[in-house]
Every structure is written in C-alpha cells, then in structure tokens.
Length: 118
Ligand SMILES: [Zn+2]
Image 1: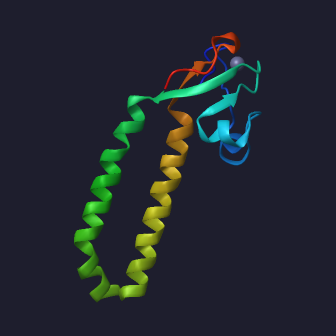
Image 2 (image 1 turned 180 degrees about the vertical axis):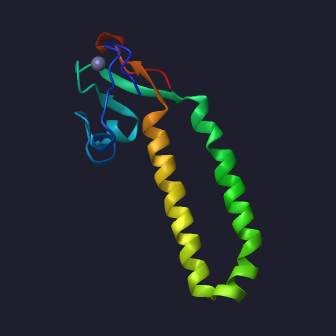
C-alpha cells in the first residue's frame, strides 16, 4: 500500500497489524491511517485485484479439505485432522491479513473536504 501523497509505503506490516497508525480507534477501524513518511491522512478506498484473486486458491483449499476431511479423520484421527484444519484456517487468515495490508488502495483525505461520503 503506497501513499498517494508521497508514493512511499504508507505503513509497515507490523504497524498496520498492531498499531493505530496515528488515528483514533474508531478511525482505524474505518480504514483510516496516517502515512508513516509524510503524515498525510489516508483512507483505504478499495483493494487491488490481486487481493480478490486470493479468494480462489483459499476457496479451492477449503473445499478440497472439506472433501478430504472424512478420509483424513479415518486415517489420522479426528483430532489430528481438526488440528490440520485449524492450521489451514490460521494460514489463510494470515495470508488474508497480509493481503489486506499489501493490496489496499489508499486515498488521500483532504482536511478541508470534511467527512468523505461513504
Ligand atoms: Zn506519504
């Protein structure tokens, strides 16, 4: 996610995940952040098409595993299979978390423009 104001990365992944990035909690939840380089107030406008492509392998993986679940639970046991399932879900959540940061399309919020129409 590059800052539209200075064309540098607006936020580090760890900051995106674990900090408020210079805005209030409410604004953070609404997709606002401040650029770490130039301090411009930014808003997540949409996500790049690469982000939406991530749904395809994730869906295939989940559907494939759902089909394999009965076979695997017989071979490996229910707990082991459920553990693998958990790991797959955590992996997908982590990849999507990364995608939310990596492929976010940012928009500069002009201070005098008032609250942006949503
Ligand atoms: Zn910037």
